[in-house]
Amino acid sequence: YDTVFEQLSMLQPDENATFQRLSSKQEVVIKQVASMLSLKRYYRESDGTILVCRFGDFAAQVRKQLEACEFDDNVEFPASLDEEKRCVVAMIAEEMGFWTCIEHNIVLNCPQIIAVRPGEFASTVWNQLEELPPGNWCTFSV
Image 1 (cartoon, rainbow, N blue to C red):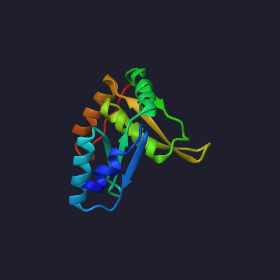
Image 2 (cartoon, rainbow, N blue to C red; image 1 turned 90 degrees about the vertical axis):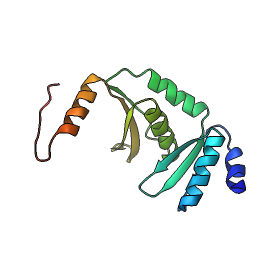
Image 3 (cartoon, rainbow, N blue to C red; image 1 turned 135 degrees about the horizontal axis):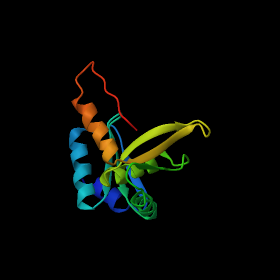
Image 4 (cartoon, one colour; image 1 turned 180 degrees about the vertical axis):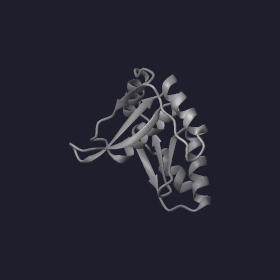
């Protein structure tokens, strides 16, 4: 507990800490300490990694870009963002009600995160697809 507290309390704005291969007890400690210090955390299910962040200028810029996005529109973030910054984008976007996806940028040969602000059309499609029985299909007018 003390080691985690010390490590996380020393994070500067826009810095983060990554924790991998944790026991369930260690995960609980990290979540509790992060919450106590008002830090954001992101859990990556694919490998059980927890990323803990202290938001700063980068997060403020992301939030500003997302706030300017209209419903049924999207924001493409630079393909040059590293994995940790893409996680920060995903955390903020999810918090603001956006959907996110990672697409491969063919020109730059690297992943790129895109945040989509779903509007009425997207919500309608989502709801209809959720209710669709297995083996059935439907069409949508665009």
